[in-house]
Amino acid sequence: MINFFRKIRHTVLSEGKTIKYFKYAVGEIILVVVGILIALQINNWNENRKETNLELKYLQSIQKDLNNDIKYYDRRIKEAQNNIENYYRVVDGMYQTQKNFEEYARLFESFDFPAEHLTIQNFTFNELVSSGNIGIIKNKVLKDSIASLYKISEEKAKYIQEFNEFTANNILNIWGHPDLPFSWLYASRKNVLFNKKVMSHGLEWDFINDPNSLPFKLIRNNIGLYYVKLKDFIEKFENLRTKSIETVDMIQNELYKRT
Image 1 (spheres, rainbow, N blue to C red):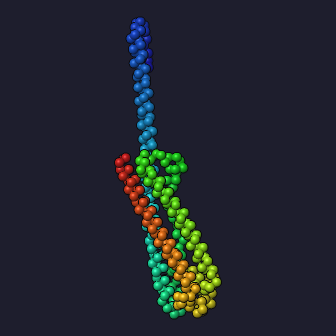
Image 2 (image 1 turned 90 degrees about the vertical axis):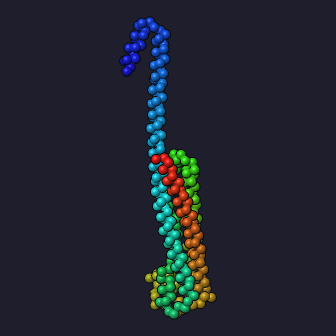
């Protein structure tokens, strides 16, 4: 092709047709510029296509993470609800007469003070931010919604951790209270370091039949604290679950429009 243009140029010059040569030269320049523009356009198209593919890949990965988080919230909510039901059972049993140590121990045998936590799958979002690719999401409303969801999740995770530390310190203080019998520790935690025969002595468990006794009040109040904590956590898990579902739907709509 280059040789072809050269031959035309030499022919025009050899014939002494200067004006015709200049017209040809201008035309050749225009063709070169058009060719460059077309090449740049193709290159930009390829780059945009790569960026779009990367964006969709990130959105699909975040959607997968959020769907797993929704299942996680469902599981944690169910666990918390089960513990609350168990608290009702224990408190109700505390106000019933316990005739012996076996009945007393049975009352607390499935009782637990769980340490709630919030652990979501935020690997994709963290990678998106750390790599500087957060701007690759073209839908600003969707991008802001995703960023807001993860920010709220981080705040709630910190709150839950602080509440856990508070309740953990409280239960440790309860266990170490001088007026609380060792039998409580044995019955609720099944600690084999303590001698069951010693703890089964009436003085170690009969407080359970006296709602006005300090040990009774300590245990009841601590159960109440954990009840409040679990109710609060359920509310936060449900809120995050709702926001996650909304964001998943937004991502799905975006993927549908883009593909």
